[in-house]
Every structure is written in structure tokens, then in C-alpha cells.
View 1 (tube, rainbow, N blue to C red):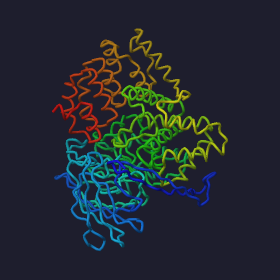
View 2: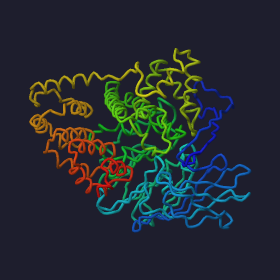
View 3: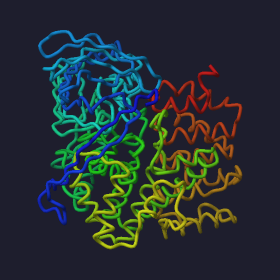
View 4: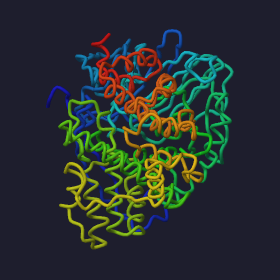
Length: 630
């Protein structure tokens, strides 16, 4: 075992249908044994496994610290004498047994990536341990926002981001996606603020700032989530709603009005939603991702509040995670494509069901363009192995696996299987897959076996394991990969050619274009387009002033490369007031490529960095060599 002390897990996955009415499911009591190694955790679940967490916490905004107590219930082997947990920058004050007796514990050497192993001695009768601790003010999972960094401007805000291995920076746990547990929580926050978690949530503020939570379905640590702020709730349907700051709540309620239709569309495809409620939380702009699929409460970026519901495919993606990821979870971060490739496929099917194939194919075509670009860039940097679906992230931050490979190559692989099996057959396979493996984990190897046993063999498909492994273990894309095509983008390309050949912008046929068609148009413009043509487009269509963040990001990237200075002010404002890494990285990368002295990038970054979450600023620090420059 290397210095990262790999965690070996044996999971017993019961092949029993979870829902009545499931079709063609093996309902025997057989079970399969799945063994895998998680090199991103110190935990020892083969000997001791955490099955339940009771968490009590006080959120202190002045100190930027959470003071907490974690009561961990254990399932252990007879000879287990030590519980090993993952921690990072936690101050452990005391560890006791349920009797109140102090336990012997030891923190291991700190690793910059993995943190420290917390080893707790167990007695023969120990079933629970109680850990009193505090978080660090700079805990990477936690972002403490000042009132000025929120939409309302009057109250501070706190949110967490635990994926991939940051849960250990605010709770001592076995921080591996292959280990599930249930939890309860009691959280005290300043009066006048609402606390929310990835659990059963309140819909109104309490008088004294005290809140209780229950999550009675087992989840992995990366789905632990907490948010605290001046928040309101708006009901969207019988089992859905949205939380947001008061100044944002009406806009959010309008934007997500079709959420209940999305849930019904998802259920029609792949079975019942098994988490009770599905609510959204619109966070302040510094949130580093588009969305985070925390069970029962998706965290969402405000960059999707376009005013016309044009960017809600992101919500379809996070909703789909309620099946792919939350219900059936990648066993390790090397298997990350099992979460995201499935979810992109599911997202596209939801969008097709709601808005038609023409619309969903536009989305798929844009994502495939991004994938091809990512493959080319990774290959040119000597990282061809990172274009495999099954990754090797040993000794690396698992965030490095969060690329279009997992998302879009994974999607194309599932689309290939759909083409081979036929949609009706493949849908039946996927529905049964989610039901067979509900609330369990999945490895890449086990999934390939599932495809063979439950799809290829019974349907007698002419697909061999060699072809499946080519998709999973080979770089790039198979030579016979089939890509989505959009007729609507063909018309967009015609208008681009007309414009580049001299047609004035006002004569272009753009009246019925969606934001996706505009993104395609802008992305396909050449870098040497010239400032005059940029100005003509901008004055006609006001692209620098667009409120659609996807279109704005594409336009600003082109503006950087074309040195179109009228967009500089908007570029700086966007970078300072947006924390979503998807937009930040291409823009800072373009700045560095266009202005190699990094002066412009660093001047903006100095102002923007305090607004970014750790997940974002860590990536940009590396890009700009920030610490060495300052």
C-alpha cells in the first residue's frame, strides 16, 4: 500500500427489486460480492464501518468556525480494535465512548491532499464513539460569505461543497463514496437565518435559530451538505420547491416552474423518485459548480437564472442524479463516469421528453464539441490516459477526473449501447439497473458485467466484451462512435457563413434562435474575426450585455482572443461576480494565452479571488502560478 493508505471495501449488493411493478428483474435472494480499493480514504470499513451519524453543531459566523459533536454508530467485525476516520484541518477536542469514558485517539501525519487519519481505539463492547471538534476557519468545504457577497447585502451566508473529498474538512467521517450512512442533525445558527441540509428540511425560519434534520436513507459523505443564510421558500409542486435569498426568490420560482414536470418525466423513464421531496437552493454567485446533487436539496448556481428558462437542462441533470449517483453511486472516484455519464444520458432523455429531440440534440451536440476539444487538449499535454472512462487518480485530487470525459464520453457510451439494443430494450435495462442496485455502489467492472448479464446475453446482442472495454479502457473515442447531429445547428452555420462573407448582422435570420443556437454561432466564429465584425455583432445583438451566462461566457472568451476591448469591463465584472469554475477556467486560460505576461489576468484575479470557493481558486491558483507570483 502506498502512502495514500488505500481503503479496500467489500460490498454485498443484493439483487432484489426495490419497487413493485419492476419488469424482468431477477428476484432471487442471490447476492454478489464487490471488492474495490479507494486510495482517497484512510478508512478501514472491512473492520469497522460507520452506519449512522448524529450531528450537533453551532455555526459561528464571527469566528468562521463550526463547533460540533459527531456521534458515530458502528458496524464492526469481532476482532476490530480501531476505527479509522478521514479528517482535514479539524481540531479534535475530545473522543469518548457512549458511557462517557474518554477514548484513546491519535491523528496521523497530515497529507496536503488527504488530510489526517483519525485512529480511535475501540473496546470489545464499543458500538458508538462521540467526537467533539471544531472546523478550521479556512476549511476547504466551507465558504463563509460577507453580506456584500450575497444578493441581499444584509446577512452573511455559509454553504458547503463536500464533493469529492472535502466532507472530511467539516465532519470526521469515512469519506469515501463507497461507504453509506444515515444521519440526523441539530444545528444552531444566528436568529433570523435559515439552515438547510441534504435532508428533510424546514420551510420557515425558526424563532431561535435552532433546526433539526433527518436523512433516513443512506448516503455517502460527499453528499453531506449545509447552507445557512437569509433564505425564503417558494412552493413549486406537491413535492418540490425552491429556496433563495428574498431578492432572488421570485426570479427563481419563475425559472423553475416546470420542475414538477421534470420529476414526472424522469419517473416515466426510469422508475419512482425515492427521496421524498426534491427542492432546489439557489446559492450566491460564488458557488463553484453549476449544481450539486445533494439529496432532497440540489444546490444550484444563480448563473442559470436567465429569465427565459433556457438553462434549466442543468436542473434536469441534477434531478437525474437522484437515480444515477445518489441511488447507485460510483464506488471510487476512478469510477466517476458511472455517476456523470449516466446522468448526462438521463438528462438528455428528460429534455427530449419535455422539449423534443430537436432541442435535446442541440444540447448533446454542444457537449460533444466540448468533449472533442477536451480530448485534444489532454492528449496534447501528454495526459492521454485521462481520456479513459476508468481513471487512475491514485495520488491525485479526484477533482482532476471532473472533465468532459466522464460526462460526455460516458454519455456517448450509453448512447452506443442504446443504439445496439434499441431504445425500448435499453430503457428496460436501465430501469431495472437502478432498481437492482438502489442505495448501493457500483464499480466499472461490475457495470460491464451487468451489461453482459442483463442486456447483451438475454437480448443476444452482437456486442462483445472487447468492444465494451474499448470504450472504457482505451483513450479517446472508438473509431465507430456515433455523434449527435442537430439540424438546427446546420442553419446556424449557414448564417455564420453569410455573416463572414459580408452579410450585415441585422439581415441574419436569428429571430427564433434559442440561447443554444447563439452559443453555437459565437463558438464557431474565427479568432481572427476582426474588431469591426465583433463591434457590428455587439451593436446589433448586444452580446456583451446578455444576461445568459452560457452565451456571455462564450462571447467573452472570443472577445479575449480577438482583443475586443469594449468587452473588457464586462469581462472583469463577470469574473469578479461569478464563481462557477466552468466559466472561470476557460476565461482565465484565454487571458493567459492572449496576454502571456498574465498582467490582466492577475489584476482581475486579485479582486475576484476572495469571492471564489476553494474548489475554484485552487484551480486558478495553479493556472496563474498565483502563490509564486505574489
